[in-house]
Length: 253
Image (cartoon, rainbow, N blue to C red; front, side, top):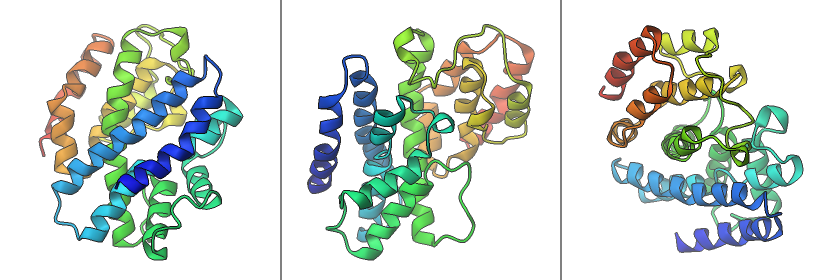
């Protein structure tokens, strides 16, 4: 895997070097996130009975999953897809444009490209191959587990420089969007486009418990204390407290 780590680093480094003083931390965050997601994918793959090729494909897809974030931020100065472009689709196009994975056999490369393009969808289409579905699910779980880790500190101590990371959402004490609360009550993954404040974002992170595909991911969300930490940051109301038990039951399933 060192070859692919070097390829990704060589691609991303110029974006970091050419970024302005206020922009570099946001891009560095995505660079570090890419390697952390890769590490999560390794743990998931180690827990599964995968062929050597599929194991490698899933790990490569995890490492390159956010390739599109770099050109996205350079052009739009935001990581919010709704205000810019679909970073998954852009990532697949960027890998192709720069021939980053031309060293892979075509079938394996196409699976990686598909996983990159699909990883940020609200749900996966039903017509994709089993290998593509598995790789994309590994990426999605690995991504979610690390995103929560990255975001919790930013949500705990909100500062102006966190704007890009928090997608421009602000703290509105006690406020929650009712449609988002309803979605998580129904055991659904909350939609990004409905978020209006940071409490909505916290509920979205909590709702990811219902979209984790592997036992390692569910256990890791518990192990890292994500649920308790997010609950502590949400309004102290009966409606919020009622979410805890079903979320924990889902993670322990």
